[in-house]
Length: 169
Image 1 (cartoon, rainbow, N blue to C red):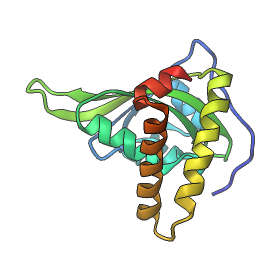
Image 2: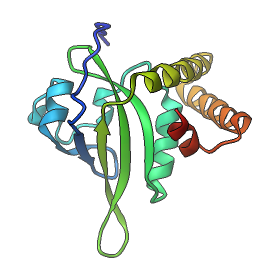
Image 3: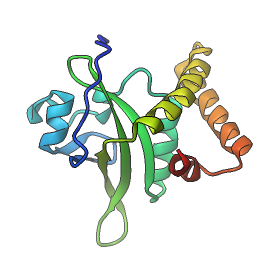
Image 4: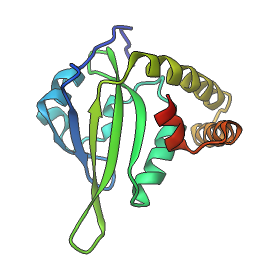
């Protein structure tokens, strides 16, 4: 995966929006998403949302995210993504399940905004530690689970929930 080291940024008033099906395949992406990720709509529709996953983003955070939204709850998370050409961009994501009339989850909706610079500095330090833990393991699933356990330990040591940590930053 090619990385340029160049950071892109959305404008403070912009919102990146995407929707996925239950398997995380993109069913909708707004113009801001397409511009910042440098893809066309045809290139992203029905593709896994992980298409924009940056390697510096711990897999264990996505596990936490998916566990949360698949249980019917919303989550806020700082995320670093990768554009098609290898640039990166940080967002504060708000991900929610979408429900049908009977209350069944039918997909997911994500709004992403420009995060504060100090928040990115703080969270990127934690993400580096989590990625290092994940990298210690030969098996990616074992690495993700080890990173997840470390994340839970960090939360326990700080005496707060994941949501509290995100909103403290």
